[in-house]
Image (tube, rainbow, N blue to C red; front, side, top):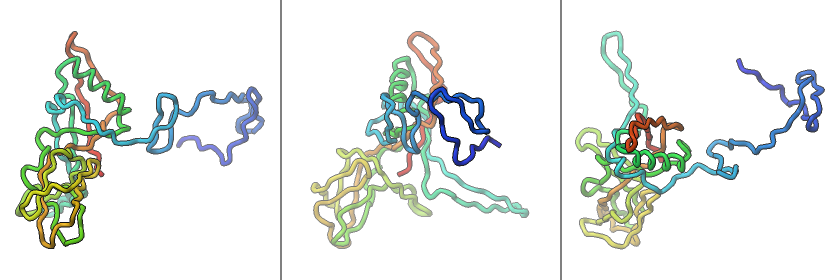
Length: 252
């Protein structure tokens, strides 16, 4: 078990003086002349030793590297095998979470330098950013995002996976605003706005009662680095190898 300081701690004497508490007797007090290098949860250290807040950076990971990466959705399922050999399964997550490894997309020294700069600006795992999943980055046709009731004007972009048995609806929170096309009752709509930070589409006028609202769109995935360390090996003058650059989706 680690050492636990008593509460309260003995008062600190002036610089250079000796502690007189029986607990710390004989130790000379020298104050820390540097500001703290860590903040509270959700805070980090800026270059001038100030405190910065963790945040989302609306910038996309280098696309040419991302398209060569590997990854996909992950779920968490508990499986218990009974004495009879039968199974009981429990899905612990209502939503899937995507993981990627960008290391497979690094093909040159220039690629690695781009990743290094991007990693440092994100402060490793601290700030999140945009990732383009080359396999799953569009609505794949029109997606139903709601039905009009004559009052509601705001609708969340969603993508439906599957059809007949247990379809999964995924909220899309980082659409490319210029790619969004909206239709009401099959008729194209032009008077709407898109929030690129939430994926909420707001119509200027509420759809009529029973009118089906659909949308087509391209989107990115909010992710962060899943490591605070890059292990880089230079293999030649114009090549570099990064065995693992893990990224993980930030659920919102």
